[in-house]
Amino acid sequence: MTSVQSGGGDFRRSLELLWGTPEEPTRGPRPGLSVQRIVRAAIDVADAEGLAALSMRRIASALGVGAMSLYRYVPGKAELIDLMVDEVYAEDLAAERAVTGDWRERLEEFGRQEWALYLRHPWMLQIAQGRPMLGPNSMASTDVTLLAVDGIGLDEHEMLAAVVMLSSFVSGLAKTTIEAMQAADSTGVSDEEWWEIQGEYVGPAVVEGKLPMLSKVGEAGAFTAMFDNFEFGLQRVLDGLAVLIEARRGTDLPERLRPPVAGCDS
Image (cartoon, rainbow, N blue to C red; front, side, top):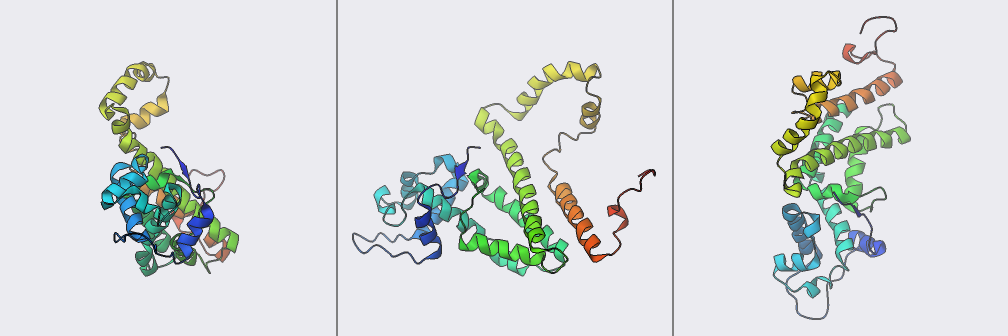
């Protein structure tokens, strides 16, 4: 996936549109447009055709207006993408605020919601957010997630680190999974042909015993399910966090989370 930098345009203008009340055009015909309508149309185009297909002309076509009319509402594609990202974060806000339970149950649900978000909007994984735009919806979503780990024994740095760790796991696995799902279309080579041809080269090494562990997991069918490991990974991330939290509380860990004693069989 080719990345697009968050805030890659006039980021001050993006922030004004995200946090302010944009003025509606005072001159020219009123085609019934709004920033909100343009953003939703852009999301629909990106969902259906991918981020590469997104252009002001394509969005205008979807709305049945001229491309130049969009510039009366948003400066350009880069700023529009900033608005699209924040709009997507708004989709689950009500559900996030309704999540109840202890810290683990809540983070578990937040992880599943984020996973579903990427499956709905795969283009979100193409937005480089190492330096993210801080929009109202993305900030509210983060605030709700932080609330789940407040008061459980972590300091503020660890609270944020826990949220980032969970999100990084979800987005990382989602990116790999979606790339695999899209590979046949993007390359013109089916999954069957891809693995069959590679098998012609790798097969002899397997037969000769040069790759014993890969052979073992392959015979068990692990590679077939390689991209179905979301639930396994989600639980292990939460298990690791549980070890730290319970240590801070001074309580006993469940048997399955206790580290093996040195010198004993695990």
